[in-house]
Image 1 (cartoon, rainbow, N blue to C red):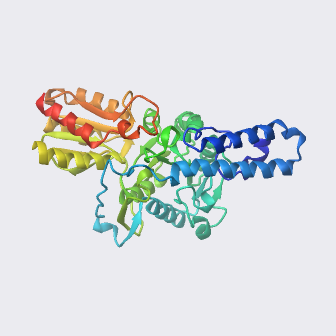
Image 2: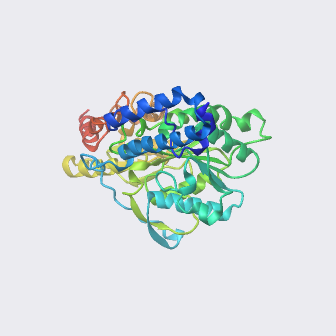
Image 3: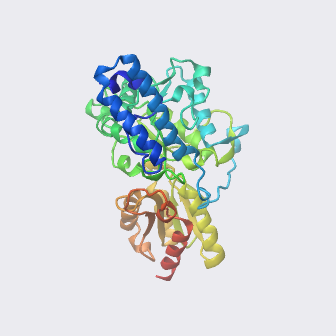
Length: 421
């Protein structure tokens, strides 16, 4: 009963969750757990004000442990050591630019959306003061408390509310604090949002719903702050799933999602929130959904990925050219559902070889769908078996993250095998 009475006033994730116990201070965690247990045991005997005050204290303490471990702890190695981010240049047609990192470009996109669409609203855990990653900072001050506001700690409720807002005709922009915590909202996204138009014979729809969520490895996030769940949603007709590779792409793709007539899930590579910096157009622009982009041309091997992994593959292409004399074509899918099969197949028909890479586990990852489709369409063009270089089939590890991640050296070794086949 206590949680129901106080959920809306606890500033961070539900304090009953022990997800961060494996990498928080074990002594302090044990002490807090014991005190929490005593409070819950005697909750029915205590005045509500005492319970509320105590829960606030515990919430702050647990949040400190959690976010020190996830966001602020100094890692033992450079979290970006597995790739080097190379800034891109914006299309001159987009107009004037300013230097922004990834979370600032996302903030800019939502600022544009709120300014150009008076029905647009943004909501989620802690978004009123900017959110854990500051992606919504200052938006409430600019656009008002009735358009940017906090929600209770309930992902199912956040997405369910977003569906209702979109069905009522407004533009709904929901934030799930970490993609790892999107699963309580799985039923709302898969059984409600994705099917709303179909089940009503197009009389009603929630196409103006966009759900944002930070995803992927961050260097020290461990099993509950590092997952890549895109394949779960790519299996769902009625949704669009989008993952940008940098600030310029993020702003244009997010604005496209917000304005699309279908519900969209927008995953943001959180390792690049601050480390990826580009000169981003200040104005309003969109990038088409469902269209891949060829970043580097090549003739020997096609490399396909999305999000953070694109920067790994760009380095792989450079290493392969310098050390193996192999010319690689690098393709960023950008949209996972629907994915641009035509662009990928045209490339593979030219190169005869395909390597697909993503952080998510290899079994039933989205690379499996790409490999299956390309094998069918390009069978007579293939010079070697299609290869997948992905995360391993284990929960995402903490101290062993460098061995889990599909880094450039695993990709280079796979290319060697492919060209020798």
